Image: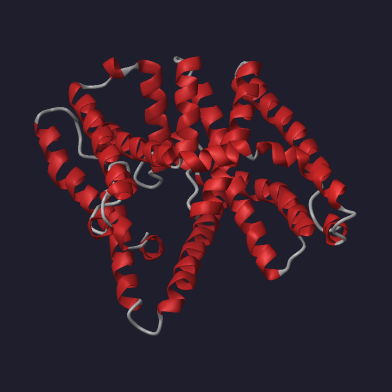
Length: 375
């Protein structure tokens, strides 16, 4: 967490610390004394606090996304070019000989269409057979994911920020209307959207980096395609190694803050506001208002004021992760801000990334040895 703080930056870090102090040192003792929560463990606290934090992050994310309506429109308006690209190149070959050379290194449009059809059918099949989701809802999720992924890619290209959370929440809200009591459909379809949006934007960034370095885009695509299978072969077993049962998630060891947020939204859409404690409903309303206000101010306020505003995502996230995480992240950001004033500034990101990677690898190895020893 200290290394993560060095990468995240001071604004998000101090916002998380402020949110952590507000949640754990001020609000938690108050609601515990009044019997609203019945324990001071992380699970007891977050079962209540996630509503305000989730509302804050969701409202901020959706409003920020709404402010990017021009980007959304450009992404949707440019959809037809994806399918017309091959034809346009063929029509212009006679006037530009460079296009014929580009054909040999670019990814053919036919690959895109074939991949879209095959992967779309596969995703629908997984939803139907693994999660008992109606085929038409699965097909609708694929269609929504296609357009929302385009929006995510466009937003990443124009702002270098991928609105993953907003993309997933749009799908969650949509399926909250289509299938209001089906939590499984709500979570799985939104997971598809968020995963596709994140992967699309990341791969687009990789391709852009390769373009700047003069790499062959077709070879990059093939490498990325093979990485799907290599990644799945490694990540899935490692996940089950670290979290063999679902109940391990959401605790002190694996807080899984994103999962807590998604779970909260799905339960709220399925069960309605009446299922929440009265104080949680108040926290929900306050969270929505604060998230919308911070997002609007960050967009509309003068720059001299924006620099003093807390990060809505950082503030809300502090309500769904343990306090020691927020403190560690702040310490990491503080150390990084001090180091940036020295000649070692260029080593911050590589060092922090190495620490995170090393800790992750050791964690997997420890879990593996523990499993082998237990067996």
